[in-house]
Length: 143
Image (cartoon, rainbow, N blue to C red; front, side, top):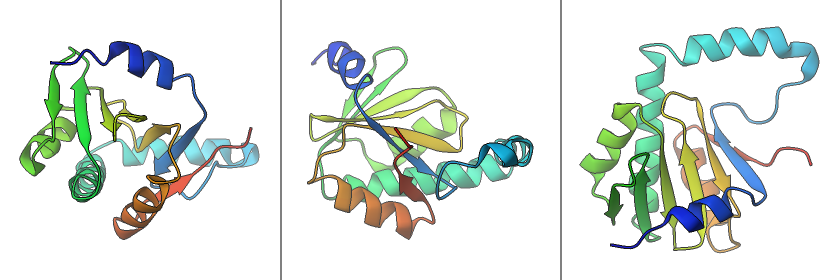
């Protein structure tokens, strides 16, 4: 099995995008409202619903692009099946998804967003369309 740790470390220092339940960064003046919303969405039953959205996005993405899942214990699953993806999100443990061997997506385990590093022009259309189909947003933070 391939060791992806060097790729993950290198890619995580690249420019990133966010796949989120919100359409963009919240203004600083709305910080308190954001923290309250974050508390709300990272509790049940909202978090399980978000996990389903993320899992469905990954299942659909796997129909178009190669995926490799690497969990926080370096367990690697190449071409994960839908049930495996659902279990990864339900576990609430951090993991990474390597897309097409050159794009990194990370999930912290109990967040309402995922982080996408160095997306390619070939991966962005799929990610954008599939995120929108799940009621999610793909956005780039300001520099």
